[in-house]
Length: 159
Image (tube, rainbow, N blue to C red; front, side, top):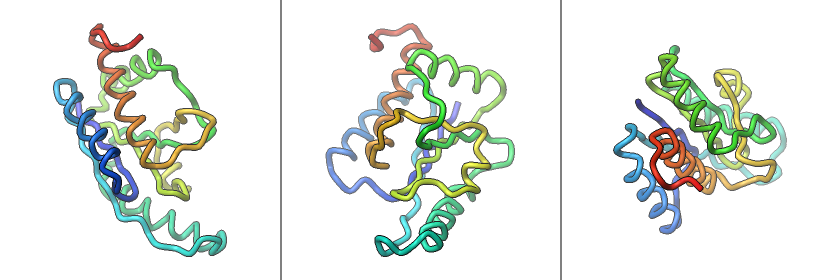
């Protein structure tokens, strides 16, 4: 099982990096998990819809370049399907059983994902109706992946 988390930008703060490293270490017994960071594209706040669309397209094109046609892609996007942890765990296991040996998660930058990235996704999910920073979303995803594997293996952690 391989999980690739595609992210726009880097984790600048030490506490986010520490949390990411901890969850990546915890996930090691369950799956090969890697994070692919693509640089965020600079733009001027309030530059307009056309510029923002172009920024999203450039950022997401760099992420999509690493995805093969048969790979399973899950886009993290506001106002999409939400899972509780138990259902997320079983859903993730179903994806792997159906032959998705590599699962890609897409986390957009501050502007979100491009329409092309959303169309490429096999599914889109949301953590909450609330908005989180893309740095925080990365840590939430890592924690939920760890929780999902603990649930699937009937190991203590999930309460």
